[in-house]
Each structure stands twice: as structure tokens, then as C-alpha cells.
Image (cartoon, rainbow, N blue to C red; front, side, top):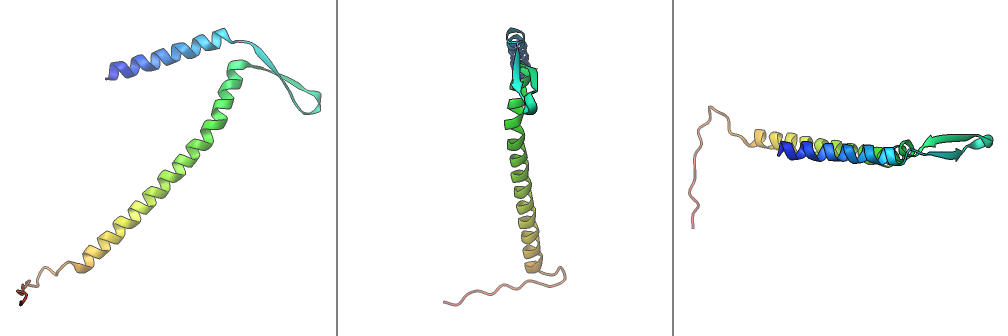
Length: 100
């Protein structure tokens, strides 16, 4: 399985390199004040990808943090509830039979 993972990542890196070499053109971007920035197309696509990825990662990180907080609060509540109902170690338990 590790070999297949490595093969996948190598194939993905090769495709990214081939795409970069095949599309190494500059794209003019008009800025404020009449300025023009010449940006390479692969860099522009990478920045656009990051512009969409970073907010998603932040949202996912916040959601996981909230779930961890809820889980730890629930575990603390469960531990407190079981500690309250646990019998003392020196007390003998007596069972009573229900009457019918």
C-alpha cells in the first residue's frame, strides 16, 4: 500500500511539473493606478487554489476544535455522573428483592 501511495504522489508531481512547463506563460494583471503585473500562469493558478483552500482548512480546523471541546465536556460530565453514583469502597452493598 505504501508503494501505491508513493506512486500516486510521484505521478501527481510529474503531472504538475508537466503542466507547469507546458503553460509557462505570463498573464498581465491590471492593478490600481495603471500598473500592470506580469504573473506566470502556474503561480496564478496556485495562488487561486490557495485562496480557496485556506478558508476551507480554517473552517475544518474550527469544526474539529469545537467537536473536541464538546467531546471533552461530555466525558467530564460522564465522569462526574459516575463518580457521584459510585458506592464508597467501605460500604457493603445490600440487594433487595422486589415484591410482587
